[in-house]
Amino acid sequence: MYMLDWEEAKVLSGYMVSLPIVRKDKWATHFDAVGEWEMSLSCSAADCVEAGLSMPKDVLEKANLGIIPEDILSSIQKLATEDFDYEEHIDFLDR
Image (tube, rainbow, N blue to C red):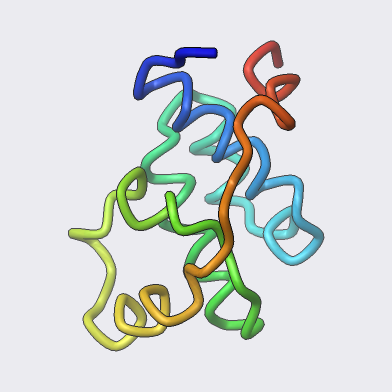
């Protein structure tokens, strides 16, 4: 299935904010709810770094990494190791 970039960002953001550690982040959930998926992914990625959790590799290309401090960005690059199946999480597109 072909998805547009914004659709992929929405699905990935939905997945990330569904993670228990991220669900507590009011900014990640707020940005996701208002359609600012790149910002939501940035917040979610920082939450994963704080908890030492791995995350999908696609976060590196979909998140707004320009706002992230260099030390956190370096950790995101190390922890972004998972492959992400968009079709498996397609239900996040319809929220």
